[in-house]
Image (cartoon, rainbow, N blue to C red; front, side):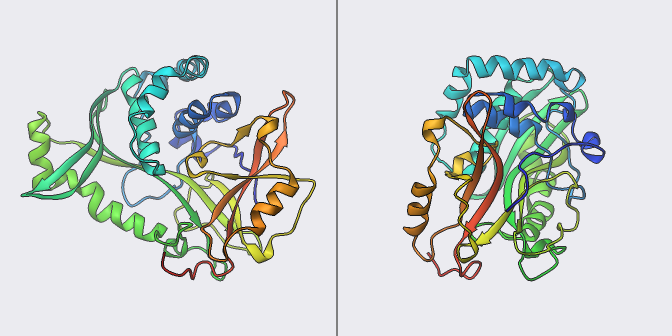
Length: 326
């Protein structure tokens, strides 16, 4: 129906990603938060051509020089995840973007060769907040301002998809083109403006190098022939989407709706947590006509008895993207 969750990282991705050889590691881990952490670090960026310089946050860490050390750290954390869980317990919001940033902050605080100087540093003018700098860090290549984002966009059913403005978030409030413009025109320049330089000076910083890192998935209409948006990374993660009227019952497949905070790493669930086809059909039948988009994972049983995601699909209202105000 959609496309495989797994993606092979070769070519371009190896130049962008210092840990391309570890791309299968998230599926080897068992704790959900640690799987998400590994996915954040190891998943490819959405873009090849971005509105500003891209840089993996760990590019100059000691882990980049010896990826095996990173793999060992993640495996040890999978066995004893308490430090990560304690860190995530500080979150007061379940917004996916804040969860993504918190996972990066935890990583950068632990990464050898990285000094995390500040996170979510507010830039103000008078009593008005102009915005925040997501990350300030120092490594052997200098001082860096990083803007981080996790995004999921659905491609147009009636256009070729090359225009990033035609790619919508599942709630239709966000567009890829708009996000790229905001990064280029507002977020990245913030550390270079007078208010940003004033804040940096208080931290003893003169100049910082601005970079972005945009992770996530692109979802293609199942019934269309949509192309990737201009500038997309050829190795980007992908799935499918379809209207509810186009859903075809597939009793031999196991589908599971994923809560928003489970939208990062491929899902892995115990057998008792899988939904039967009957339960899934009852859930689908109970949805309101204009229910929000739901991310579904198709699961397959593994040798150890657990069920793992092999495909993900957004199921959207028949009126999508023309939804009534909520």
